Image 1 (tube, rainbow, N blue to C red):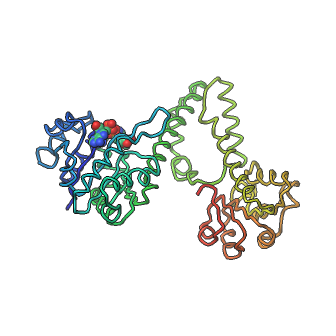
Image 2 (image 1 turned 135 degrees about the horizontal axis):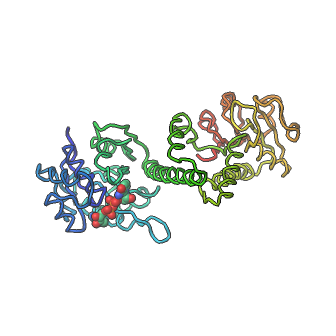
Image 3 (image 1 turned 180 degrees about the vertical axis):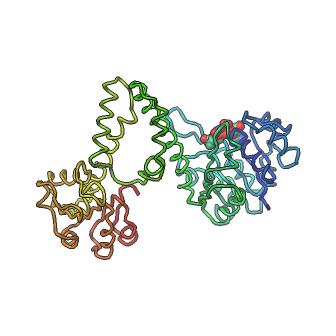
Length: 427
Ligand SMILES: NC(=O)c1ccc[n+]([C@@H]2O[C@H](COP(=O)([O-])OP(=O)(O)OC[C@H]3O[C@@H](n4cnc5c(N)ncnc54)[C@H](O)[C@@H]3O)[C@@H](O)[C@H]2O)c1
């Protein structure tokens, strides 16, 4: 395969694994680190970090003439077509990301780009908080090079998902590869590095690529903490937590799946809230700390409150709700968070209209607000709140008046795409 020539900046875990693995695929790689010791180690065929199989792979790549290292930034940029940045992005004392190394390396690469004619792509593989490519990386490269991103040079964000200890295996068998792009040409060049590897290649905006990495890590942390809290409860009750979680993991429909992972409105219904309350009470009565499980209802209440806030913030007084059961396809209104909002608005003297084709017998306090069909609701409401994704609601797209505001808790694409005055709850 015809790979571009690569320079890799930062020879820590990510840089030295990427360097050896890309060289192993047949790329010509130059590693750069500001620590001469790491450069010496690579050139003598040794890996600068301890990682299963990395010494052997480094030795092989150096012997094959595909991998070398240098402290000479200008030469590394001049002699490569793609520079991959793998410097550290540690925490500051206040928790904020420290971009000092990233800013420095971008200025250094930018200065080298000023002296280079040919098109060059700068790829950030370090983990960076959303907005960093646009606000830090591109300006630093443009300032130092005097050139323009997308036309004179390209940028991509290609976050790293390897796990220390199985980094080489993870490189060769990725769950998926994420390439955040601003221009087609640079995205295509970076994609060639991964051609033939298993797993999907997800091309998206640089901001989405930045965010996916944090969603991944937060999810892994949430899974670990969740399993440990269930474990603490199990142990206190003399139940084998591993057997419980093995059975839990057998459910690949609801537990280990896409289910419940679409951002939207608060949960409700006859089970989740009451069962969480019972579990939280049980933990407290056992003297077990379960902060994650305790936080779930709080966070859910916040989602309901932000829905209410969006409605009140419109400044309008007549509000129509399409769907107020706790989810589409059911008439169950027990602990429906939409109903909670409706009751708040009624208490605040808003003029509220309700329609839900599934609910025949509503509770008495809201019965006066119920209208017989969607058209009567649209006719009298300044704000339309879509509370459930009942298929019949998509059809309102063509019936809305321009001045009507739509607040959508479920994301009906037909309405989002056609109505200018549209607000999604978390999109
Ligand atoms: N370690 C992991 O398992 C892992 C996994 C995925 C993502 N990441 C992310 O990848 C990035 C790198 O992580 P790491 O663990 O490899 O870091 P690291 O601290 O092990 O290595 C960073 C290297 O960059 C070098 N460096 C700093 N400034 C430089 C400069 N201006 N020019 C050249 N070299 C420079 C340092 O000397 C060091 O060798 C971080 O953003 C991290 O969050 C790490």
